[in-house]
Structure formats: C-alpha cells, structure tokens
Image 1: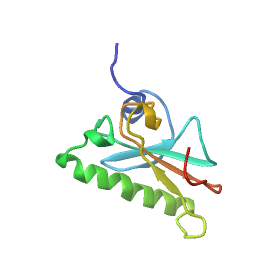
Image 2: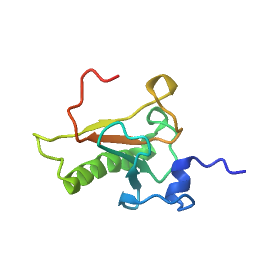
Image 3: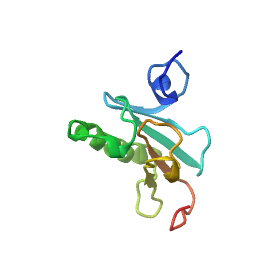
Image 4: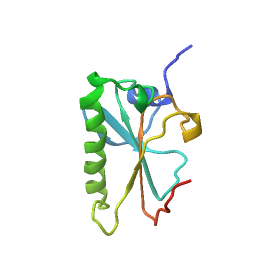
Amino acid sequence: MSDKTIFQKIIDREIPAPLVYEDELVAAFNDIQPQAPTHILIVPKKLIPRVGEAGAEDQATLGALLLAAGKIADKLGIKSRDKGFRLVINHGRDAGESVPHLHVHLLAGRQLEWPPG
C-alpha cells in the first residue's frame, strides 16, 4: 500500500494528468474540482505537507511556486492588471486543505469575491 499523496502520484506519472507547467522544482495541472473557469494547482515536487511546515531549506521551492504562477498566468493571458488571478494556499482542515501536500491554487476567469469563503 502506498502512502503517496495523489499529487506525488501525478508528479511520478503514476496517475495521468496533463501538466500545464513543469520545471525541476514544481509541476502544475488543472484541478479536478475547479472553483473558477481557470483553476490550476501548482505543486512542489518535494513533499512539503503544508506551508506552515516548510523550513529554511525550502526557500527556493517556495519561491519557485510563486514564480511558476506568474509564468502560467502569462502563458494563459491572465497576467494583465485588468484580467488578473488569485493565488490561494490552504493550511489545515479548517482552511480547506484536503491533500496534505503543499499546493498553490491559481484561480481566474471570473470576478472573484472578497472576502473569500
């Protein structure tokens, strides 16, 4: 029995998922339960269970997640100030975390409300 998260299985190509973006530190793919017309998950290849558990040694990976978001937004044509996008990171069950593997939600394609949920 495997203890891998679903995200690790996608990164390891054990579960097929078309990648929107990939580099040496992160992979990105469409969310299977989108909350906006564009809903992409940006995931570090290294397992970090949640953002509050990242350490100093994860600094480059944390930066890579945000830089990947900008690259993806540019590729999708949503990086402009008028269109825009939102990044969300959940930590813990009360925040909506459902997979214990740090990931950034990139949401776009509609007017997003504030405050969120």
